[in-house]
Length: 274
Image 1 (cartoon, rainbow, N blue to C red):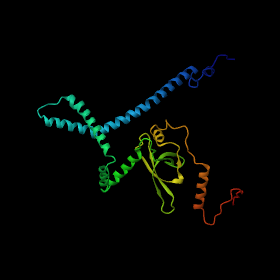
Image 2 (image 1 turned 135 degrees about the vertical axis):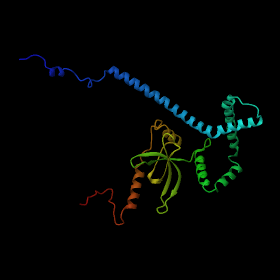
Image 3 (image 1 turned 180 degrees about the vertical axis):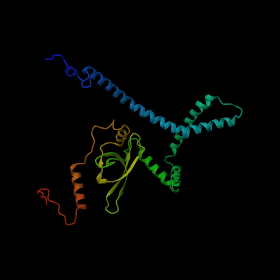
């Protein structure tokens, strides 16, 4: 007999390196590193989003308000003293700073005109200009809905609607109510904002009996949308109550059932027809 080990016997004693799992110490180290990385990301993400929003707002203000005011200041100074050459630091730093102060003073002064006759006259003129009145009236209503005085509750209703298809629900804000001409059912105009910029979204017309009132405030809903769900409250009114569901099902059955159809009594057994 040949007692020499063959090549197959030698391969049977060798274990596959891909099958071996890493030692428990390495797994604990990797879990610790991964937890630290996720914690650092969660710590940094709100700061980055806040800085991004501030930079976006300042860049728009700089393009459309601060730079024109700074150029106007430089033009006025050069017009008053034509022979004087302004230093570069004045044009780069001082003039924009003066423009920011002028913009703040301008906004502060406009705040006194909010509840005056001049504001009402301005609204009266813009609301009667074709095409401009549509845009101005829509923006004005949105600003009025967002504006809230201290101690005043915002008349805004937060609901859940089936979007983008049945089986999924998203939070939305009720902006207006309508009524169907034929059935007299209440139709809600629901604005569904998108993540992470809630200023862009969708407008949905949804029957009132097909939405679910959310137990979140408008501030909580906005925080959840901006944070992509990271700040979601622990409790949510996602499903309707049994009473509401049964009443809605009965109403739907009465509307869509044939005239001669008879619904079975709930206490009697239902027999199938073959």
